[in-house]
Image 1 (cartoon, one colour):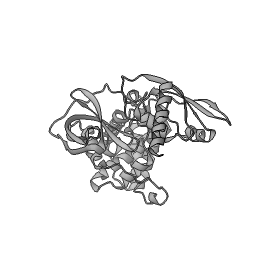
Image 2 (image 1 turned 90 degrees about the vertical axis):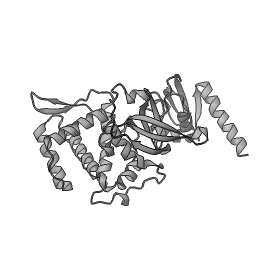
Image 3 (image 1 turned 60 degrees about the horizontal axis):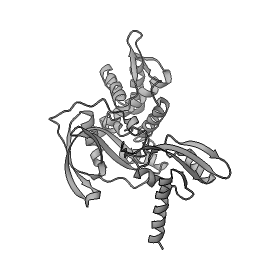
Amino acid sequence: MLISPLFSLLNSFFLGLRHLLTQRIIIFATKIDKDMSKQVEQMRRMLLILNNIKQRQRISKQELLSRVNDRLYWIYGYKEVGVRTLERDLEDIESMFCVNISYDRSNNYYIIDRQSRDYDTKMAELLMNFDLLNSLGSENNLSSFVVAEHHRPQHSEWLPSLISAIKNTHPVTFTYIDYRRDNSTFPHRVEPHYLKESNQRWYLLGYEDGILKNFGVDRIRNLEILSDETFKRSMNIDVEELFRDCYGIWNDPRMPIEDIVLRFSPLDGRFIKSLPIHHSQNIIVDDEKEFRISLRLRITNDFVMELLSRSKSLEVLEPQHLRDEIREIYENAIKRNS
């Protein structure tokens, strides 16, 4: 999901587009350089396009263009845009956010395909985050009533360049720090395809030597865009499916997808209901004695760390090996803190 530079940040690429969090949106948008003003303008056009098509379900090209231009002028003072700009924005929305907007030439109207998988969820998240970005830079000072976290990932300055490379299908080169190898650095040449946000970090998804890999943006150094070269973007990546059975960014297909049952206190359960651990979460018991859920995903390190962060009343009921792993972590922690 990466279209206009600023856009792609939103839905992680948001194809997974799932955790486009307020903190990163606010921090990044409020620090936009002047040379990003065109991307901000395009973001606002896209918001207007999506809202108009969504609200009216069917809308003609001329009516859509007229409504978008009216709002752009009266709200932001922007100049009118033409049909070609509108068509490019629509192409970007579809190709980067997987929101299928079809054009019926015989009847001259646009319509959103509402039968696509997770349409309602994707559209709600997309519009919510566009609304947040759209409100930034307006006459009202958003910072006066929205308080964001301050632990911004380092080296997020690479994001605009990476988005530009993704949009224009330019390969990139960089050195990459491997934390597991004593911070050694290694050179990489990558065909960038998506950016994905996970746990307050941005990750680059791209092909290297024909293999799809991910790289933490905060560990990238010496980034260069090979603007004289282009690559053919792979259309075979289903990002939603890629991360459907995992938590966070790590998805090792060699790991089995397992059924997990967890028990929490009723109080913790209220928070977990409002912010589910995973989309597969299913409530088994919810009463005054306990809150019990089932999940189905790969048990990666990311998932274990998430459980530990919610561990005040956590009890792992299934599978046994996860219960043993959590207990071992607790026992070692007790030894270290005794």
